[in-house]
Image 1 (cartoon, one colour):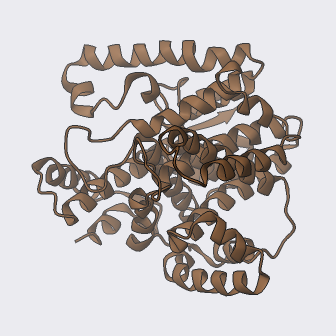
Image 2 (cartoon, rainbow, N blue to C red):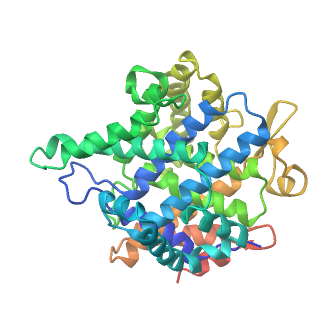
Amino acid sequence: MPNIRKSLLQFVFSGSSMRRWNDKLRPTPLLEVDKQAHKMMVAWLLFMVNTRGMSQEDRLALGGRIVEGGLFDYFYRLVITDIKPPIFYQIKNNPEHYRKLTGWVLEQLEHRVRPLGPEFWDRLCARLAGEREHDLADHILDASHLYASSWEFNLIKGVNPWSDEIAEVEQSFGDGLEAHADMPGLVEILEGPRTALGRFAHLCGHLRFQTRWSQTPRIPETSVLGHLFIVAAYGYFFSLAVGACPARAQNNFFAGLFHDLPELLTRDIISPVKKSVAPIGDLIKEYEDREMQRRVLGPLITGGHADIAGRLDFFLGREVGSEFVTTITENGEVRPASFEEIQERYNQDRFDPKDGTMLKICDSLAAFLEAYTAVRNGIASDQFQQAMWRIRKSYQNVSLGEDLHVGALLADFD
């Protein structure tokens, strides 16, 4: 059975310390994990547009390649760290040099990733070694990468007028995106706030400006956007560990990727504030629902993307009251279920299962890594110590199935 280890969780989290564009003046921190989150959000939009009319089997196969392709690219990026893109592309254009670099990358990844299972490891090796033809998943990921990177570039372009690379970089983004212009949905996304898809993709990028634990100094700081990607990745790893069907695994990834989307509208309100007085939490929830409908879901529906709005509704658990409620879909109705029910009866694509309880655990694990890493980096804070104690205590006796014990996983963090 696939196994999740401390080293993998920390490896994924390390993208929170990996700065981008670090040879340029930046008005705000630009982090690798934030870019990956934005990339995968745009990839999901393109996936939704490009699979209209596909059979469920084909959709799930494509979705799986997109999710894993995004994770595999992120792993590669974490290992090669600060090689500038022009240098990396030169290496990639030389098959022998790229083969050697990829072989070294796989050596660095093996002890962290192979415990997720031989099938996952084989798919990782095949993608990174370029052993298959480019398909629609690759085109979607390439276009999403260019969009997310160019979005960041537009933040720094105006404050780096003396850089002799600015015009060249801008041209390369333009040429790259033009090469994908025939992909349904991409031109609309590139038109920005003038269109429903473009406005939504643009809004998602803003989540990188919202810092978690904003009242407590941390090293590294994490944004809401980066946190979403970490939870999504953990959710997918947990799905592999419990033997989730393809629909369930993908639902868990994308639900994790969007679970804090309402914080576009309310900012990161800490749990003690939400829970301090019952009417406060209810008021915040009511406001989130109203603003989500007005600013996100309504414009998507009006813009001809009701299917995208409906899927976001599903990921956010609006029909069942929370993104952290486990659900299945039966006879066209979304309804709550337990983890045990999904494992025993509903772990099939036709039930469209989503593990809200599992995602809550992944959300807590991501928060634990934030606190744990800050303390390890020398930030003495009662708030972090209390957070770690609270999360350990909450999950010390929690298991997902027979082989995934959350308390034992947390105990590895000494």
